[in-house]
Image 1: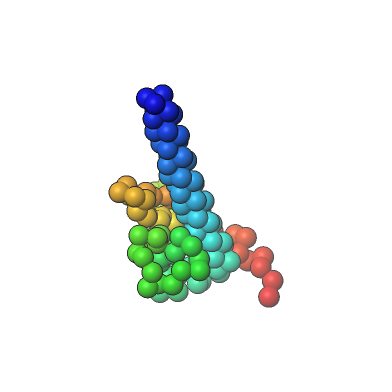
Image 2: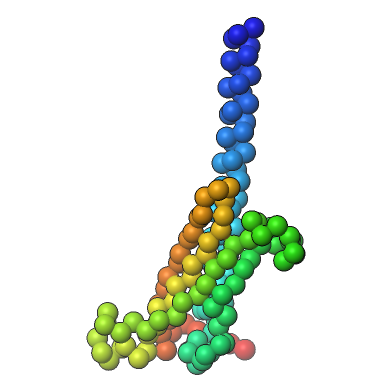
Length: 134
């Protein structure tokens, strides 16, 4: 009976830890999707749009499950911001007006732990966004 009880406890803990690992993997995957989505939007903007105040929404939220509405559980949401800064001081002065650093950061609560991810890139005045055809 003791051996059966020990096997049942081991089986139960293995199953519960696998559900936790699946939840964490799902949250990490969705967080990566949100980061890439925001970076792709930045990639499609023109230099003037990136530099105009208020055109790029700097604070955003995204649900863990895209079918959820905003009135659903707030623990199932990613909260993030987009930071666009000049690259002054890191490069030759000739390029400082033609280059920006874009950083997208997201945060979410996973159980009792705060999680975050960050993705950064450079955007230039004469970059790939100029090659988008309408």
